Image (cartoon, rainbow, N blue to C red; front, side, top):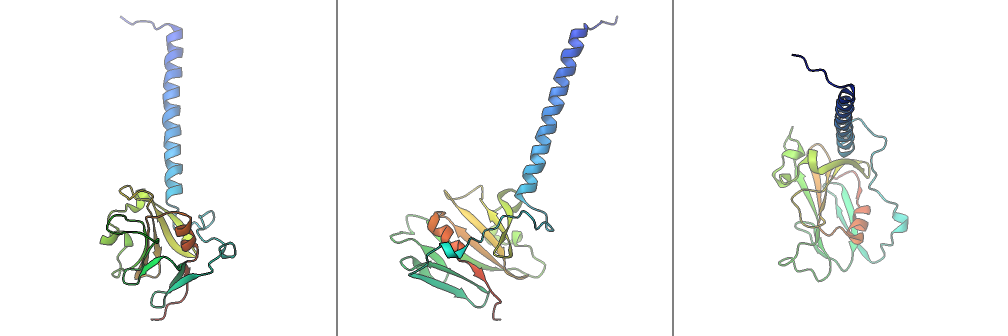
Length: 192
């Protein structure tokens, strides 16, 4: 009727079951830590990545300055780069936008009262929870995003300017020059 299991089989089953539980537990802990690093809690200030570099190391001689008085931000960019004020698009010299997409774009997006920037149609290809991590960008709440559906090397920043305005920075160049341009991005009190 009852089959007696050999003591060695009990040991093998116990070890196997213990290992399986241990592996699942380690996976759950790793997933929890990974998710906490991707999106930091709202009240966490210590340990947030700082995206502001020291300007003293960057030589911006010959660079031009874009200043947006209405929304309170400015940045410097190399003088030989093409600049389109309508969309605040920067491109490297010799770039054909009909053939390529290497650009650095700054776009101010307006929120409706009570609207979250994740609800903006301009950002619908970005999943804030999956693609972004919360960062401090020159003292402003921001998200650094690497969208799943993207151009090669694209990195986006979503920076909260105020309750009603968000600055969206689209960097499909993502090289040392575009990174240097982003280090010159500063914020000030807007004139409204």
